[in-house]
Image 1: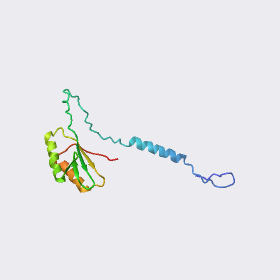
Image 2: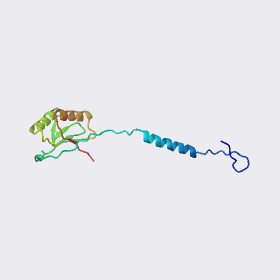
Image 3: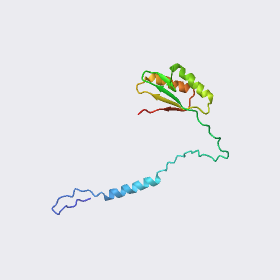
Image 4: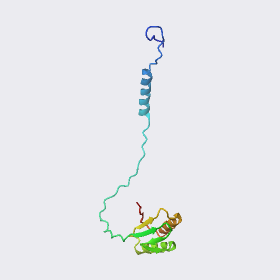
Length: 139
């Protein structure tokens, strides 16, 4: 490739002609796109099936259980103070009344409450097989 004179004064031209380089790169890009295998992964989707028999009427849920933990670690069950050790037995009684229609356990913990009391309450709920547990957000 010869150098061309810029303005006719004998100075070599410092610019490189990139047009052929761009053409070659575009051709290579098209070749790679066409020859690259298309990656497809099957996704199993379980769609709901039509039910001929309608589900039974849902029973009205029992009233929720309000369980509060204050900053001192005192636990109240529906505004009645209880010991942390007795909470699991009370939860098991609620579950045994109707295991398919359990009440909602609403836990309202003070932000300054000790973590171990909250951990004991959650462990008791898990051991009693409570299925509906909610946390009350304080504003």
